[in-house]
Length: 298
Image (cartoon, rainbow, N blue to C red):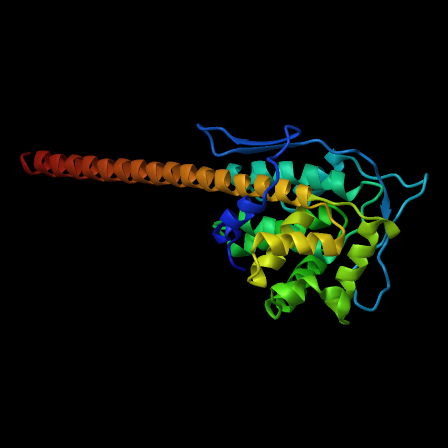
């Protein structure tokens, strides 16, 4: 997957109609590698069951008064139980904040998983975890994270891959004119447009916004007018998309800074260890020589 940090965010800025609101702030401590995320959400909960649709690309969410959702701490605990190895702080801080946000999205009354949301989360996760020391551990963390939210991590990956493959064959025109064609992905986008237009449950989120922009990137259609047309076709508020993409871009920028600080710290510590080792070896050599000298002089 191409790095989102390399996208033409200058084009995104040209189409941005307002900055991120005060209710969602992101900042990086200058003396640490931690990125803090603070977001306000309405805390409404639902139960979830899987759809038996042939495409296997949608999860339907149903709610009732008897449904008792897990708490945020239970979700975090499930994640820590599923992945017990230590995670470097620069990654762990972001993951812990992210799982709180997604828990609140996941258990909103109007929540319904869709592949564009899945693509958005996969894009965010892969960007946040880029450069993680172990590819195997990075995927294990992904599996533990999604399962802690009682969803299927394989579905996220499969959906993201299908959307990416479909979008690479599109262009600016065909991408926004999905409603005039038939196909699996076209059907998914039509369903989102209907629900977002008021004919069913639809819960807009930042991950959905990132998923939209990923579609534009893969279709080589990052012009501001294309985003506007796609939002209109999907019945999604473009102002919200602009705002959330701007917040996401800023988060990635700060994360890059945090990773650079972490790398500098690791390099300094490595150099100090090497210097201590060299000094210890030199001392041992001197001690050994002195011992041999004293022995030979007896």
